[in-house]
Image (cartoon, rainbow, N blue to C red; front, side):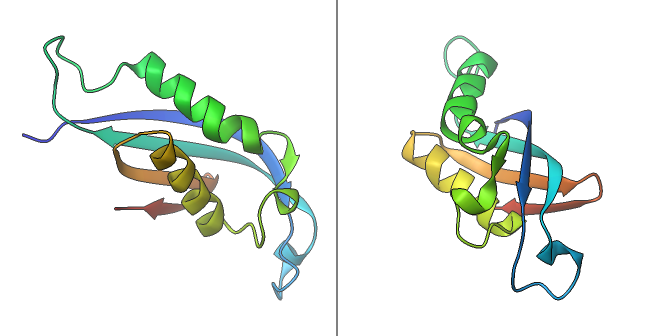
Length: 115
């Protein structure tokens, strides 16, 4: 049996994509939603990972880096795909066993990173 624990986070950030032929070329902001799923065995306490521990790691490693920033200042070419991949790398480096990371740039548009 595979068990996943998922938690959602939100942050506000701005970016612009100079190469983009449309409106995304201009400075604009998003209310991002980040979903992080970790996978692993259920331990003797009946959990994979405590939700509070997942919260602490994601907020420290990802949300605090992006929230209320101009993403162009912290990432080259900050597309949703690049932001999600950077989040994955940071969480993996922090010891998370990730099942997937999904970043919603708008209420109807998201990207998903899988192992």
